[in-house]
Image (tube, rainbow, N blue to C red):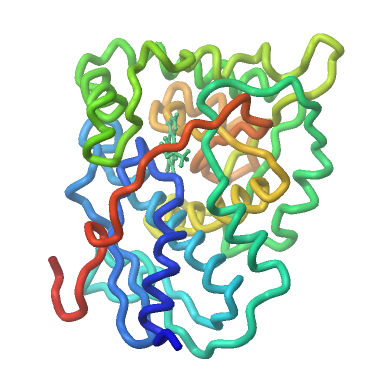
Length: 317
Ligand SMILES: Cc1cc2nc3c(=O)[nH]c(=O)nc-3n(C[C@H](O)[C@H](O)[C@H](O)COP(=O)(O)O)c2cc1C
């Protein structure tokens, strides 16, 4: 029978399938007898696009959330603490395993949903999207000051989508941004097993992917729906918790065959952020925007090998 650490190591194969900003996979894992640590790998930071490491930290929160789902599915009970040790600021989440029980009845469905989840890159199918189906999977209770707000009034939806397009125009005028983006969205990334290994010409433009025209089909039926993850406060802990919650929502959506495109550009530009702030809950901070729908086709992005993302206990690098 496999030892607990070897089972935990095996489950990291699921954690690394989490979405991350530009597929930088900015995480490291440390497994010991009964703990798993998720650490931020700041050497993978995007200096221009994400100067405060917000998306980097949020990506580690998403990986922690996916790991939590995989652990639960196969029967591990655990306690998870975020930022548990102030002397180790890169330690994002610590999982203390308290016991090992039976697998959940739907463990295979959960692990498959983690495996099949993909970001939408090539547009949406002409398949009707039922908002009620999405609502049925959303966490009912407020999770530690983070939630997702669905933007289902057409007027607000269009204003969020327009803010995204405006933010993209703004950033395309910044040559440093364009260069950094191009280095991560590049065919050569196939070799490093990170980033998005395609050329930008082959991808739909951001304007196509986030176009307000894709909300409804020609019959007026809904095809996509925008949601904003929002939090009370805007500190590192809320970035992590927003990512953790996003993992739950994206994996549950994947179980129902839905995908989501993810973006946060407009949230970093104060003049554009105002138009997002108007449509979210009063006094809350928007953390990240997603657009749900059924993906036209969903190319797989690569992942680095587990060996490259694991630390050995007792060593920090
Ligand atoms: C915090 C965060 C920020 C992201 N920001 C963007 C974004 O601005 N634009 C985009 O197209 N995708 C964004 N993504 C999606 C990633 O590009 C995607 O997760 C990554 O390429 C891996 O692909 P996959 O989700 O299909 O596994 C983001 C994901 C996360 C977790």
